[in-house]
Length: 61
Image (tube, rainbow, N blue to C red; front, side, top):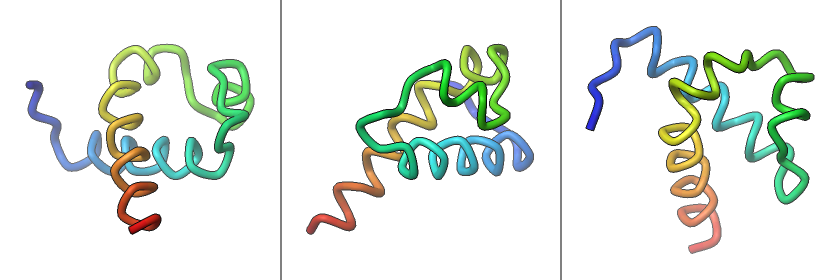
């Protein structure tokens, strides 16, 4: 597991928030249109997805 610094964790949180806003219509193309770069998706995509899913599960409970 990769350890992220504070700035990276904040960006992951922002990307996860965008993913939650887009919901089922979340695609790479739509994320890019919302200002997420391809490099950020490659570096933080998995972590952001996990965070978005955890937040959705927490809200559903």
